[in-house]
Amino acid sequence: MRQSLVRLFYRGGRDRAAAASRNRSVPGPAHGPGRLVRLVPAPRRARRAVSGKLPVPRPVAVAERIERSPGLDHPVRVLSETVVRALPAGPRTDALHGVPFGQPAHPALVRLPLGCWTSAVLLDFFRGTERASRTLVAAGLAATLPAGATGLADWSALHRHQQRVGFVHAVSQLSAATLFGASLLARAAGRHAQGKVLSAGGLTAATAGAYLGGHLALRLGAGASHAEPIGHLSGLGWHDLCPARELPDGRPARRQLGYLSLFVLRQGSTVHVLSDHCAHLGGPLHQGRVVTARGASCVVCPWHGSTFRVADGTVLHGPATARQPSFETRVSESGWVQVRPRR
Ligand code: FES
Image 1 (spheres, protein in one colour):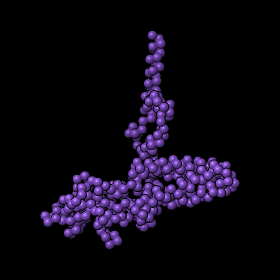
Image 2 (tube, protein in one colour):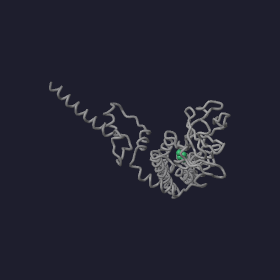
Image 3 (cartoon, protein in one colour):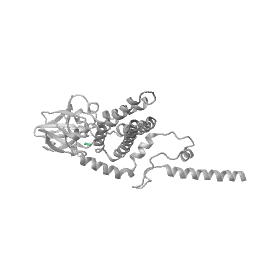
Image 4 (cartoon, protein in one colour):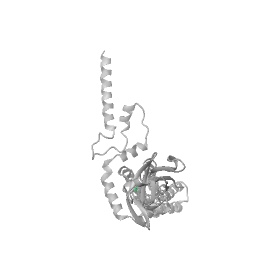
């Protein structure tokens, strides 16, 4: 009897401890605005008490907590406003986004510092490679400038939860560059062992930052085209869209074609049709302004100002880099606008 009571008391205490640790480790709505959400997983002992199993480290859990961390919003806002002021819309900013290349420039440029630094750390394991390693560290440092500039330009036109992850990604890469800079100084002064340790630390920081960059691009869709795949969602051939007389002249309207939302602009007897979801982050183009740029009618996305030629969806200004899917149009004898995906 006494032993049973002792066991019951012990179990109750353990359950209370588990419940307390469960409450501590659950992030989300329970945290009020302005409070920091824990950025790293709960302590191992507490999580083991909840699940009864050894925890598996999941970097994605860290990335998701960063997405939900309002504590980062102040530095994010300050940096974002600074970048927007420093990079006004124009050809220079378009080049940083990658508009002339039709794809974001940042993913291509980040390979240079990461490749150089990884090679330098690998060479450090061999004798007689000090000069080659030093050259690679220096080349990687030089390549951080274009990579950082393009990354900042893209980052300044993202949603807030994406910017939080991008901010920590940038801090990681800045730490990596600082460590590699210190490594270069140590190597130049002949302190090769210290230089190697600093390079290894820099590569660790760069790898953590690269993981967050991948999360940002692949999980959160920063950089991917958000326009709907019209080739898959609309059938072949011509489709009736709407009577031409229902469309306002010179003002954008939205019409539905099956699952597709379409931006429709009638200018006199000519009708232009684009996919309505902006290729940058899916903004509603039918709410945008119609302007004339480079002698052509264009629509400006209301979210971040990407500018597309209405005739064929060509990008004239970023941050979007992918052409907006467009449709060929004609007006039937009965006065209906008909569309089919442009080849
Ligand atoms: S959603 Fe960003 S420019 Fe359109």
